[in-house]
Length: 389
Image (cartoon, rainbow, N blue to C red; front, side):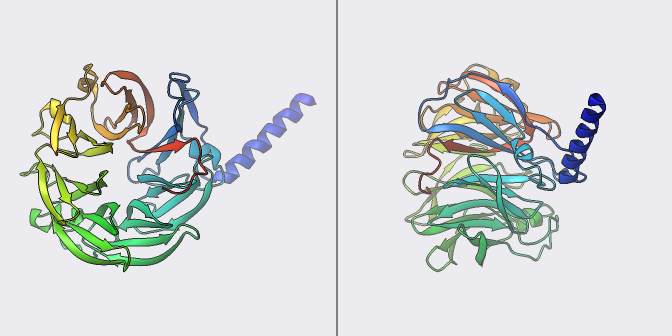
């Protein structure tokens, strides 16, 4: 009887768990041990990694690397939020922290998932159609949106916008129209800078791509000017002087991708880094660049640019040969204190990818398997109740 009772109990528990997820498989996080305590010093407790997952697969997942224990936890959101249908959703496009909350921009699911930054338990969600990237300023979140459906069309009519969100209520307060298919977004000196791509329109004809950065006044939340840069803009970040760095994907055919410097005082491009760029991270006065494309030499895939002098100071910051084994370098971040470099490999974009950790000299420390298309990073401070950055 005791054995039979246990079997019945387990069956009921299984049914209850399944009912929480309905038709979605209940997944538990997986743990891989790396280097216990090796990164425990300093202000940070760990590192989050958002895996994009292929469009239509509903496989965006969240991983966490614990600096104290050295344990790498895969797919923690599903485990800590068993009652949320479809888990994180379809295509994780950006991940940022503001104060004690994490904000995951889930593109094809048309939402921003808001979580407690320490527990990753869901707090709420904000509905934004075809949302792309997020940034913050003085209690408000600003999110780029393609506005229209996911659709390649040279005659695409719907311009994109930036949504202004109250981080206290998670309510959309206002929108500002910008260019077609706006992607990266950054804040500097009282303005919001938006990298317009025109990606849906340009796929059929190069001249249909956007080539401007929209400048929005924070005070009025209206576009005040546009800065001409290059075709199909993608990522934009602010350096320590408040100047902007923006990448162009160009047309994928005749023109290479490039990195551009925008002087925030002149509101114009004043310098160009003639290297292909798919992603980059800024730490101090160093910009770490991942380059991709047929026009790139392998050494140019991993370069460092001095943001003060705007010169390439290192054309191959991975020094131990590990770079030759990376199939598709995709995401990058740099530890603010140790200057350890974290790079993801998306592989074939179908199977799980990998996260590589290198020391500041460019030598590999370890690598672990991640979710599908690992891409976006956030460092978790030990004092999570600190004021918003």
